[in-house]
Image (cartoon, rainbow, N blue to C red; front, side, top):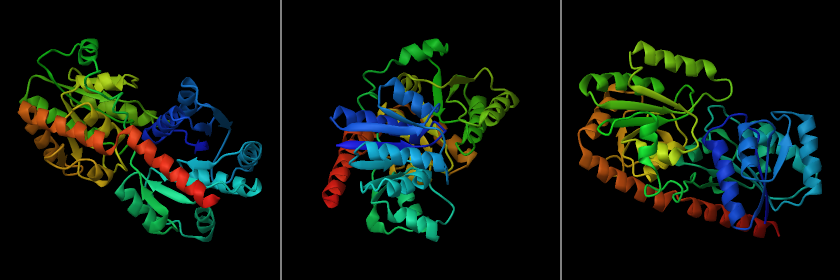
Length: 373
């Protein structure tokens, strides 16, 4: 099987990371994978680091004739059984390129992000007609597709984003290393969150909650993991300014971008996921795989992951008071933290494990190839 993955995104978040993760896993199953990405982007660099074959594209968007011709030429010279796009904007390049190259390979689109724009005009109908199957990473994305795109339900299949539970394994993570690095005391309780520094991730709510909790407890540290993505440096500066305004400089730790995330999660005692509108929540499932008790907003893709009171706690989206109450509930109950953490990992292993999700995709590819015969 020969797969061309595409993701012409300049950002680096859960969507882009999953392209690399899935590609690596498919390669371990003796499936040939090439990633087409914009040269100089983080996804291109990360794929190169792990020796995934790459096709560099200089530009992409709604109509880039040069990129269309380049991809069309590449498709003519290479035989792909499946074209798999992870970014809907790629369709404006891929569909014309498939037409020019007279390529009949099945086209799969994985929809990671919701849209608030109706796309049922003639041009979008032409684009989506060429797509053979769309995978949605959560129920909310499936419903968003039906609401905004010219597709029917039979064309959509929910396949969740995956977690490598072998990598994110509490028995292999080094909790002490990170706590020593940041001089976190043995008796200090660490509440952390991990996300790009971008609006809507809930950093403001988290920090205002931290201020309230810091006034009640004298042994807390708050860890923020991440960095601004493309064009988001100003927002990162705003968050650091907010920490200063709240007088939390000695309580908040900025780790920046990290490659040792299992160790980072392991160093935490509680994981917060206050995102306003998350399609899925990769950081959430990764933390859960590390046995971490989680407090997450009761919105969108989170509802496919967390069952309130069973494998985590849900709080009212954007509600600082409710977030604070749920975090305090876990701060004061080590037993509940342990029970929720155990249930959290069990959920991830059963529902979001990388092997399971990879098999879901290979089964989809095989079914489309049979239809194409």
